[in-house]
Image (cartoon, rainbow, N blue to C red; front, side):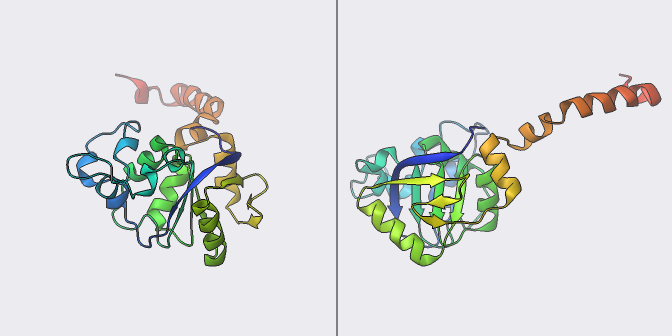
Length: 197
């Protein structure tokens, strides 16, 4: 997983509440278990026509938002079914941070596991960042300092550590590789039948 420390980039404004995971990545693209290649289907049904032509008014089809690294969204972002493909699609498009007044719990947790920082900020702070995004200003998210454009945010210390170090669940496990190897060696000696084929 890519490390997350300080992110500076264009933020795309999406002032829509209750954007569900089916809006983020429609069900027909859930057949893959690959984390890559889904960015082209991000917001598919509101970003493209049925014959795959861009809808010019959709924010991610406009410059400079085609290169957005941050998404400023409405409340309850990521509601609906629990599909990990939603953060995969955002990440594959290039979005590393989503800022909203609130998130659906499962989506929020999936973001952290995939290297995306979901920032839940007070509505007034989100409104100010939405205006900055609409003005096409770059926004800076400083995870170590827990600041975004002068606004402070709270984050669980363990999740912050994992993002800064680029540790997903596998990476966290591999940090304990010497302990796991030592345990297996000890167990092979005391319970060898567990390792017989």
